[in-house]
Amino acid sequence: MNSSAQGSGAARIDVAIMMGSKSDLETMRPAAKILEGLGLVVEVRVLSAHRTPEQAATFVREATQNGVKAFICGAGGAAHLAGAVAAHTTRPVIGVPIAAGTLGGFDSLLSTVMMPPGMPVATVAVGGAENAGLLAAQIIAVGDAALASRVEAERESRRRKVLESDAEVRAQFGRGAAPTGK
Ligand code: C2R
Image 1 (spheres, rainbow, N blue to C red):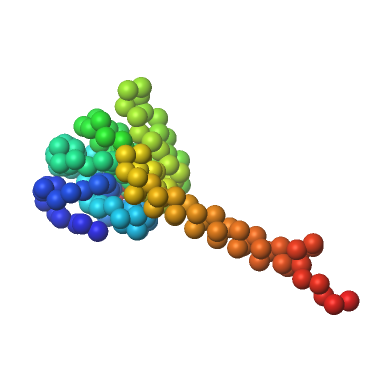
Image 2: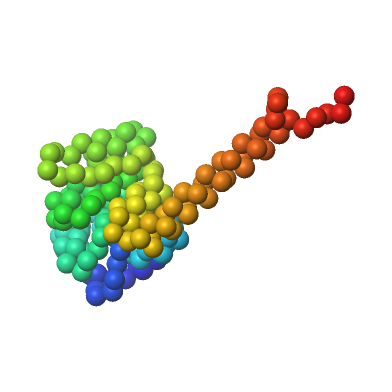
């Protein structure tokens, strides 16, 4: 992870991953992991629309100027981070609702997804950081053939794992089972 603490500098960043609190980090880590595995450069920041509104807005504007291709924003509770980020950029913004507090994530899901017309936030499942990373990669891959083949290979490896599980389970039951010798 690129975890430069100040501004966004001149280094190439493909995807900015933001979260409202450090308490969101373990939920958000899979986004960074999948993106880095696909060869993309991420910058990961703890910045809050509520608690650090100015720093969050400055980061988004600077990252946009520096060519970031997508933002992923995770927040729990009254999750306004993704919407606030969308207000400062026209790059794609993907929201990850986080289950924090008493309502199990339904609060953050609605706060993230129910954006007004003109301000889209592509919202994944509660806790769906891995899908957020994959979605960002798929968006970027539209203009990047090498990345597109890495995304396709990743999809293929999931396909293969399911088919291996299928073969294993079929071997235990019914017509897929190995003959018992009776
Ligand atoms: P703490 O654990 O720091 O008390 O935060 C965070 O994302 C976290 O899930 C509790 C929850 O508050 C969320 N938070 C937001 C925003 N900033 C922090 N929803 C925001 O800007 O939307």
